[in-house]
Image 1 (cartoon, each protein chain N blue to C red):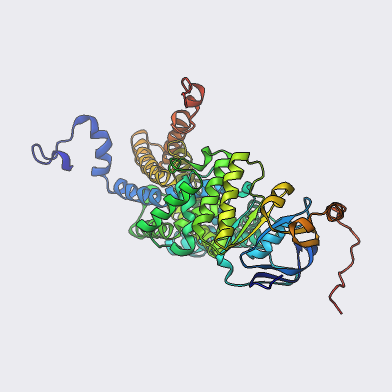
Image 2: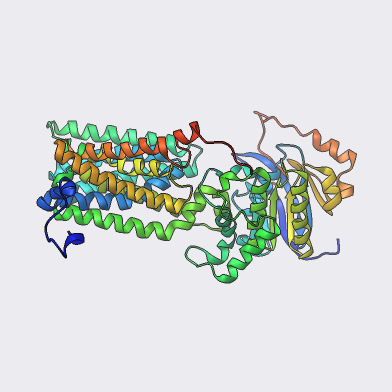
Length: 249
Length: 302
């Protein structure tokens, strides 16, 4: 690597729930402006890793260092975690993206309104402003959430399975936005399952199966050998697991 | 009244007479009217947020938690407004905060931890009462005295509703965000936990206010019934809060008149009126009311 600035550095990072590691001894860095896919089987710790980066989950061990405050991370969790029955309009949902600037009390200026309008247009949701979010389809909801990400205008963007259960047209549109963020040299990290898409769009990949399996150039990482290794991950808890001694010396 | 002041002063149209005379003739009715309006203005929006946060039963549980605190205040100082208010507030805040903190920092969910704490506080309250060994008349605490509100109580109710409306205006954004997308709020701001705790504090405050007029068992009614009814009339949260306030005020007035003319106890009459509005909304409400679901009309083109 030609040593560009790092956006996120992992130093012996172990993340997990209780004392059970979901991500075990991760070392490495995500360079600023890179476009990275995080790939691995279910239960491999991909979502956990993103939670660790955002800071909603404290590492059990090791350190995650960010180049800049964590508030400058835009994070899209798995869509299922939003209360879709809440009486909120698409416009208001998208406008939340301005939080870091408007905060608790700040008004929304005419300039902000123009930005919201722009974001809605970029995701193809013009005309949906007053619709309650409960009436949106899965794809439209994801478009609205991408519009909110656009407004957050963050240098680092984390996406957790953004294209799961989304149709081809919507996926293509939203992928264009991901490419645009990459062109604007934002750092983008996305958890994905579609390996063809990863090979096509994402230059770098982290293959993880609780332990990191491979990390670097996508085509090298996604070799048959590595994928097989990732698939062998043991999902069950070991009731007699010992205290991890790695790094103790 | 003002509307006919020019031509024939002091002459009401005969039809409106039974609606107005009770209030114009009797001071206790006017006081009760002010009291229920204050309760409706604070309780309406609080109820909407409780409902949207799926905490309707939390409000109910919290109302029970207030009872022993107020009872202790009553035992120590008799029917004293400050003692019962402080007692109720203390019990409510302790239970709400403890339950909130437990659900945040352990794996127990809020409803379970709240149930645990309110049962504990209820048992504690009953124990304290029985230790004194006196057969205390707790009817006041249980069902309130909406027709005997003194200046102090009215002032308390008005202060609580003012504080509630102001606090909700300040906390509006994080409150809404915490309902819709708590993970997003956590990723952009640390205001989630304090917002939640302040909101629980407001719930307790309104319940304590409500219990002076309606008693601990019925105070939740002025929060949850108007809110649940408002859900059937709007799918916009701001409108929902306004509708909920209006339903609360209307039920208050209707309940007071009902109790005046039919000689029913006022507290239950108010809650019954709110209940009637709820059932009517459930049937006829434009947003998902039963009748609209049964006869939705022919489907549209797009």
